[in-house]
Image 1: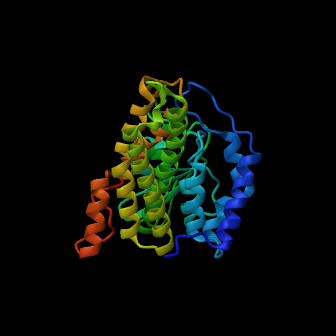
Image 2: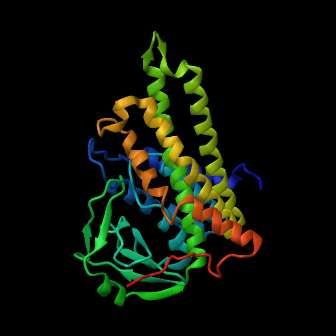
Image 3: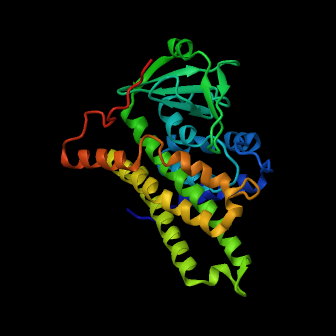
Length: 317
């Protein structure tokens, strides 16, 4: 695989950069979870969410968009809109929320979403969301979370939309890109801190032990991003699972190191580091742990995978 972006992909990234530069992104300090309506509207109006359905851009461009926007301290719904919606429901309104497993499970962006995607063991179903269908869920993570007020009623009016295997593959790529992007944003914030913070008369970042761990974090983040782009380009379930497993596996260690370099300040809502790391804490277990991703990937490679690669993920009602 050529890891350099094509001319079309460079043009796509340039267009994305202009949208981000021209958008006045609102940020609320000290608020654990916040959805940026302005950024969400700007991205939707730009048409960039449709890239995965265009031959000249495809899933690789969508993966690039997710990773790039995830670097920001603002939070919007990216993965399902960029990689799943163009495939299975281009006419359905966004934002999208994904409920994987039991229909009563909490889901990211559910209160902001206009469409919910139920991902079952073998099939997916689509349902429209009306005002009053969702209630906020109080959680630790930075993503806005919600639950369906009457899961049975919303599920009853949903409609089948095809098998779930390709949707799961794309969601794995999206999760990897979100992890890589959020970690890159966090790394940039911490790098600025250790450059400015002085200890024993020297910048904290000048100490070799700090440099080595930051370099390791940077290389793992870059590897996660490249594995996600490779999976988006090649189209194999094993590549998607390996990319997601790798990103989830290294995310825990990177978050630990970044918070340690920030000291006590990094554990409070007074510093923006939580905007990235609290997202990563959720994503590190999205769709199961890294062990599950590696187990399912090995099953595909060596011929003993479940037929739909879903393990024990069942849609319970």
